[in-house]
Length: 110
Image (cartoon, rainbow, N blue to C red; front, side, top):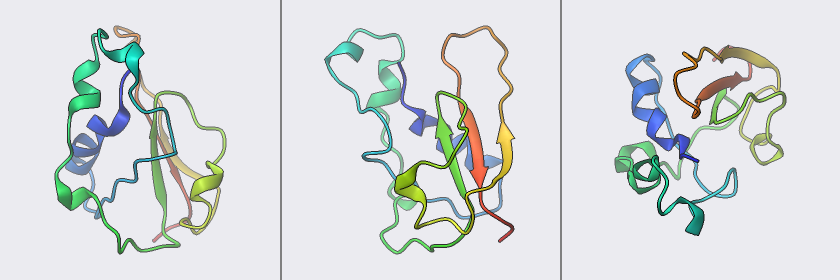
């Protein structure tokens, strides 16, 4: 089990958009079971403060970074996004690792 938050800086390298990272009730936080996991570092990694924003714009597209393919927008995010339609998906995996990171962009053009 790994934290998808480590993918945010990589995603940032490939976009010219401002990114804000919401962490909380949208996924499983680290617990006792990850203390000896090979991806433990992903839970210990702290993102720079400029990725967290309390004044985040609403009604824009939202990218959901997850460890599984997203079929629908999580209910917690519906007030932030301008549409619950899937704009784009990153689903490519090499198959070399059990851990996979998927990015699903929900919304309409900015």
